[in-house]
Amino acid sequence: MPVFTRDGDVWFDDGNIVFVCTRTGFRVHKGVIACHSTFFLESLSTVDPLPGREYGVLRCNDAAEDMRLFLRVLYNLECPELNTMPLEDLYCLLRMGRKYKADRVFRNTVTALQFIFPSTLDDYCS
Image 1 (cartoon, rainbow, N blue to C red):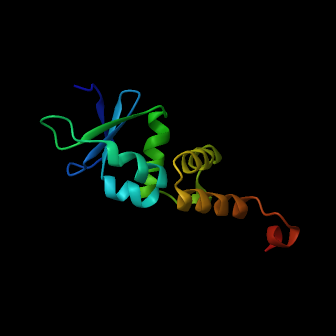
Image 2 (image 1 turned 90 degrees about the vertical axis):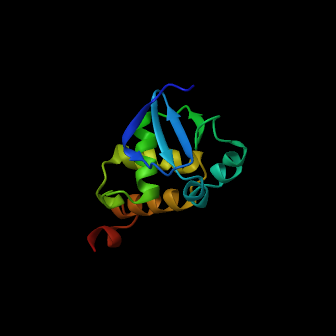
């Protein structure tokens, strides 16, 4: 039986997959995650529920804080606007969006960075 502590922010009792990062578990819905990530769309189809459980477990090598932020953005869980997030959070979302092929997360993060760091003087002054 996998040993993990359930996350206090991202844990849905009706979820059917648990991502475990280090020792933190995030129980989410395969369908929701697969809608946002082609990586998970492909890889979650092979994860079956554990015997006696309603969910499967997928171990990830990400930091729990990174996965929490990524999942909170996917689920729109009281996240601030991307252009008001700290740069380290935006960097995390770029990495996670690219790694897990979550195109919307990646594109929205790039757009937020373009807003924060305009490429022309006219954009900066407007």
